[in-house]
Length: 295
Image (tube, rainbow, N blue to C red; front, side, top):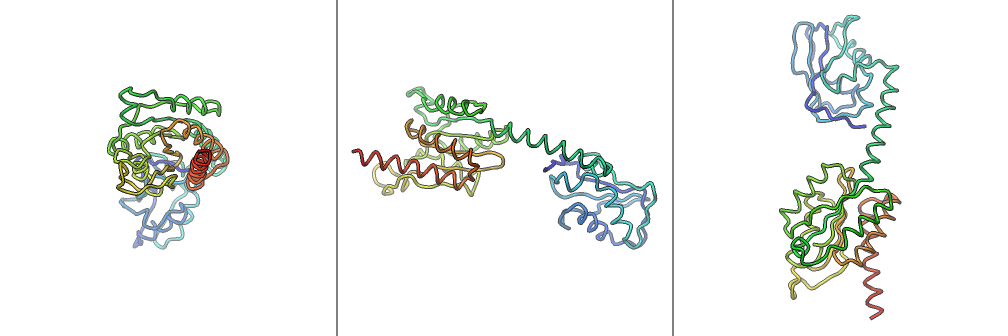
């Protein structure tokens, strides 16, 4: 389980006496015990019976720090020129203070933290938000039938669902909304519309801004530059920024209905973003072929 340090990255050893000691070796021993890269920790202060180190990262794994006091002292004790006493211990004002937890309590604490992590992860996974898009929706020119449908489908699957404001047809407006929403604890973010081939369609581009490796398969191809087609086809998109999926669906209601079937089934199977995007694309392409055949 990853723990944020919240800028409380310093820890210190006291009482400790050193004489002609290689400070880099002290940092190296700490790195080994705490499973850090050598470049991620350094000695930043040395005083009488006091040595301070700083961890140069924003988070650490719980299992790498909890109850590691004795292991760190043992590693320090073999460094030439280092002298410890029975009272020597490792201290910190923040999360790193968990280093000092007694070994017999470490397992219990890790167990509690893991249960909390699973509970939080499940709560986030089951929180969803839906964003319609387009000036026609924003101005009330057409009824948004997609959001209520998606909301009801997800509620039946046990999700807590919010319907957000309609997004503008503008890349620089969409991206900040999606980034802010990612920080609000939603495990599933769905947008509808804005995936076409016209100049106003920028939803897939927005997904690639927040996840450069988003999966964006084609569901239809056009001749670029012909008519209103600025792009060479229609794409859908699936991004994943832990722990959230961001999925860009087309706007037509029947396609949204088909897409939701694939999304719900794919998430139940635990598909990754590439697999989920592929399943969605296949659903849309198959639907288009069936419609074309009927005609």
